[in-house]
Image 1: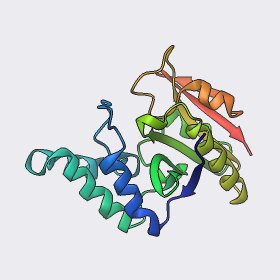
Image 2: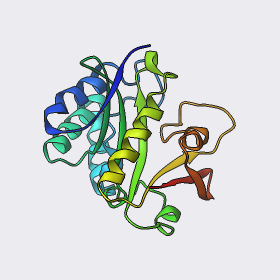
Image 3: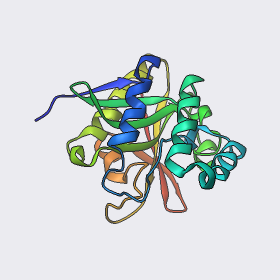
Amino acid sequence: MKTIVIRPLTFDLHADYLDFFDHRAFSDDNPNGPCYCTSPNQEEEQIKKMVSEFKSFGVKETLRKYAAEMLDRNLIHGYLAYDEEQSIGWCNAADIEDYVGFVPAFARNITCGKTMSIVCFEIAPEYRGMGIATAFINRICMDAKSKGYAAVEGYATLTEQRNDFDFQGPYHLYQKAGFIEVARENGQAVMRKIL
């Protein structure tokens, strides 16, 4: 078993973030890619502007450019997973208020105090099924508690079987980590862990 380390994204890890999305994320032709996990932290107008540039500059190149700019402005938050010194996974997690349009509206109506949200996972294909998503959740909960958060939430896709669109994490992942369902709507469940 490999030793996987989870690290919060800091300025000195920005190159590792870009390297992960450049070379290992979606390397199995997952339909969610290419992606640099910018959308959760963008307002709708910025997303529209970015998409309008896809045809001129290429999708991956445009996404990377926006990600690099957002990293420089400290607008992307979350955690990287490492195998030795190579980044092999990403989890976008931050204060619920950092996600302008990405957290479901019905979830915002039922918060229970200061809330940390988990909105996206991407793990290199050869590392999936090794407990990395669980390791992300455990680290996020530990850090959120130490920062005075009341709860951590995830927004699980409700589906009978795993599919490529489970980027927000499947229901059973959160259950296994001690989260409970507090609401559901439109094929999505708010999974919450009180800290």
